[in-house]
Image 1 (cartoon, helix red, strand yellow):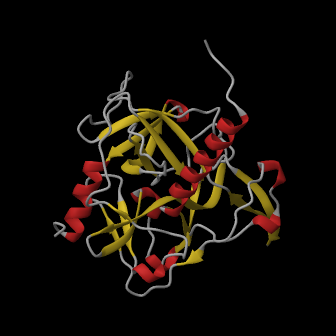
Image 2: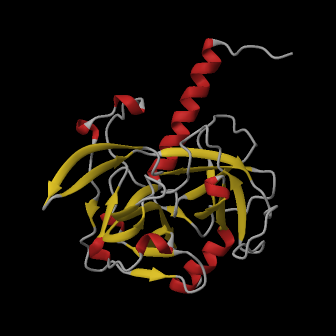
Length: 285
């Protein structure tokens, strides 16, 4: 028999959800590529747009090397100086409904000015990384150790993704320059989750069961399309309950593309991501 949760249980569940979301955000950044791209408008399907590319990134480390992991297509034609990074903001974050957000809530990404930062593109997968010194990250950010905190979740396991989907947006400023109307959009973070699917039930030429898995994009949760989650991490949580609960997730892969008009998200397995990182930095000691 189903029963309603008590007020205390609801409070604990909400607290756990917020703690998990905060943990995801500490490991996540938005990546904005300032190189303008002329192509399909992700916000108005069927139309063309001249816009910046953006996606999501994971803050990670490999032994003593620190970097931001993302999808290669997010960094198309970019140099480190072309990028702006949005780190997790500090202080108390007041939860707001989308319709309550306004210009006063908008913070822009910070230009990546570190002279030692370098972009590494994967030759064989839609993966890329930007090396950064540890002191360059925001004060509320935290590097995930990919030498140990990872897993390839088996089919049926549930994974979570936190990122910056294009559907989660509002226009905070409109300007007209030389007769051309420009809209500055603010993107706020979103999450989705779903059960791992080992292989597609439809025809595709770019899926490999050795490299990828799929996750249904549950549209009712966060928007209609996963554009903007590209480069975002998926996370797996063990069902073993500690004596004192705390967010305890492992890196489970990187989102890169989608099928079925956004209904299915493709994820590069964590073990495959680690292979790319090892190619760049060598074996972790």
